[in-house]
Image (cartoon, rainbow, N blue to C red; front, side):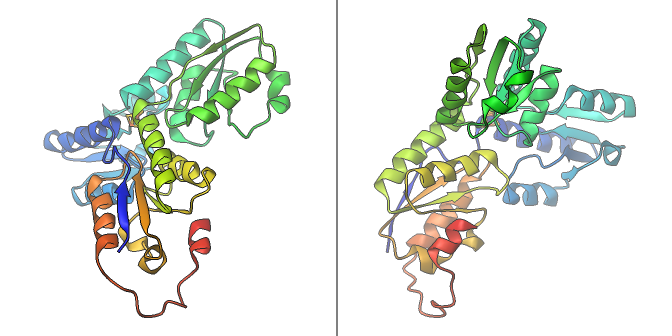
Length: 299
Ligand code: F3S
């Protein structure tokens, strides 16, 4: 039986807990509560909310006759204005830490800085930050090349990070910008402390185990980042969204297994996975038919 180590903290972060609480409280006051997109990037949470009657909508027109919950990632201001125009009630569950980034970029833009957001350009949080940062704002990732974008860059740059960014990636982009010789560079470390705590715990855990299971929604940015952290440390890692994805036969070959979870993964799911791994079940059938660990890791 393998020894199981769980990276701490686990369970919902402050912003996710708050968003779920606000949505559920909304149900007590309003007949119909929906969320603008997925409230959090986690399948178990979405299923549970759906069972309680809180469902995501893609278009604002689908939220008519109801109240719309803005998720923890936030949304562009124009969405709120459109809700007002359409007479849709809003419960704004934007995480205060995300809201802080929006305020920082608004301030930078008002002071004449071109905003650079270090993060993933297609993530809803980044889209909302960009919308708050006004024209000329751009997104950079640690893998991106500054040379390709420089012709359109200003001389006064203000840099912020997507809240789920890792420190190393953020520093890499700032270092590139520093080398480029802008007149002025203002840097705001807007990475969420809850995210940093999970990343540090995961990196630490990966050092003392043989392999790591990262648990969380496949579209969760902070969960994916944990997977990258383990992978860059050279340890085998698999990112799974739910216990059903666990291929016990593959994991029982390891003596020490670590489990790390994203900020929107319920603590019970982590416990369930740990319990499954601790169960003294010896796989006896269809072992050959199972994919190799390498294949699982690649998915
Ligand atoms: Fe907010 Fe940090 Fe969670 S930004 S949503 S508390 S990961």
